[in-house]
Length: 119
Image 1 (tube, one colour):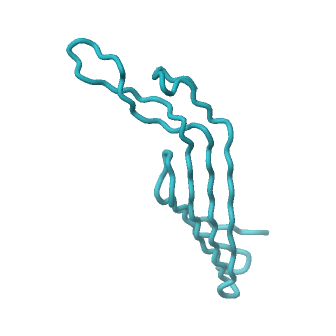
Image 2 (cartoon, rainbow, N blue to C red):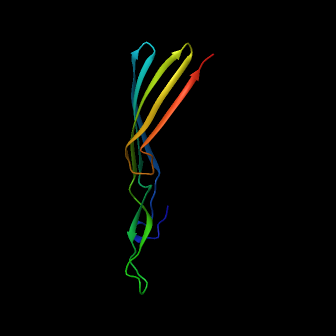
Image 3 (tube, rainbow, N blue to C red):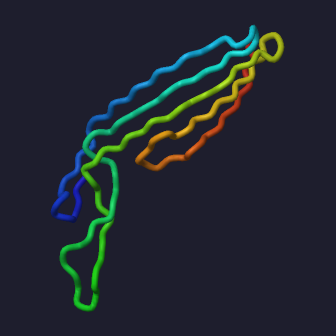
């Protein structure tokens, strides 16, 4: 990505490291509790920010531009959940994705629910 602002003329976002860890606990014969930690770090770029423009037009006191910054994006999320066997082969799943640290565009909490039936 190329920026028009001289201090950050080139920003490269080429590498990303992703990691995850989690566990499941059988709380009861038909109930499982889940907890996952998810993370990612994009190296070298991906963030946007405002920087003051060095030159101004006559009559304009100041201006700024939205530019690509050489900083990376860091994300850390927590994903708690429950799985319950309702009856026979019918399974109910309830989960959430909670952003703990996210320097990009994100939702704070994303809830999900699902029903599975196996044959």
